[in-house]
Length: 495
Image (cartoon, rainbow, N blue to C red; front, side):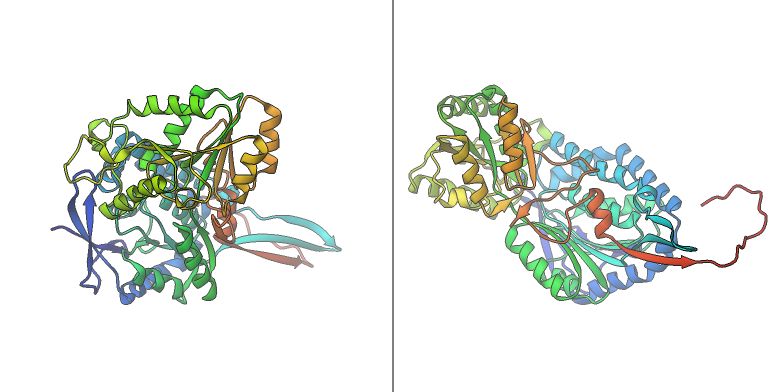
């Protein structure tokens, strides 16, 4: 069985651990390889490599860093089908979804190519007689990134391109469930010209995570995952004196007003609820239908689900498997909970006939009507292909339900009433809002992140807030009494 090693100092690194974890092909239900699980000593080795690489990388010109990001972007675009195939094999998402993940990650790489502009400070001349004040942005040092299983390419790409372009060195800890994409991207960055030690990849479980959170030479930690783990990451990293951005879980609602285009709503609910098998922190998992539209909307959604194919992502199917058997079984258990709580299971995905391996981790799209806000089906982040319908009598009741949720990641309203949409965007207590857009993930030059229990720490991910997170500002007050110059040089300056 092939064993996937870590990536340290620009080369594969086996480390000292004898522990490994299986990596599955979810569509077959079989183990495709093993991945090494790092010890504390292995994390120390990776951090030492990043620390040693930091001084030279921080002194590397912005022009050179920008050039490497441009090269990485071009290589990534040219070879995106390779990366998409890795995502399909280890996560299970269909090829079109995998390519979409790579494309959204590339947006942040493209944003990172503008690093010379993003690193600019401010300047005030003659604030007092002969005195100027200006600011500069400087990198932090070694930063840690802990990424989830559901987007093994996109989420790391949210973080490490900006961190590296800003002059930091990085330890990336991908999910042990689908770790190969991280190694592939590290090798591609090396091909793009990134010096050894600037990006290191360490695989592992809680032992390696805790080692990153506690390590004295790591200045900041970025994380995406469930809310309980995000709280743990935030509390322990902050306790150890680190900057933290920890993006947590979600329970995203779609509010449907009676004037909405129900065909658009049905298409959007299916796309947002069942894309990537519902394993998205921005998936719509609750449709809040303002009566009298629920019956007609459920009929339209049901008709669309009848045409979906579930199966191996390489076979042109619409939806793939879940990541593991344990997760599939946990998600499926909520269907029984819904029945026990008095809801109606309109479409039950447990009996799906999938186009894939008989041992694949299959669960088809599931639609549940009449879900109570007291039910665990409503309260928990299920993270699978289960779409709940909650019926309400008015706009105000729908907004009250959404605002009462402990989560505040993403939400959407579907309406043709501009006044209602404007009121919604002002009143809703959620960090990312869509108006007739079901998954309002911001483009790369805005920032991603929610409110309430969906975000812990200092800033959101990517965009301008990422540059703020990965740099420290230094304010300089200057007075020069005599002019000076550096001599004559008629050559054109380079790098």
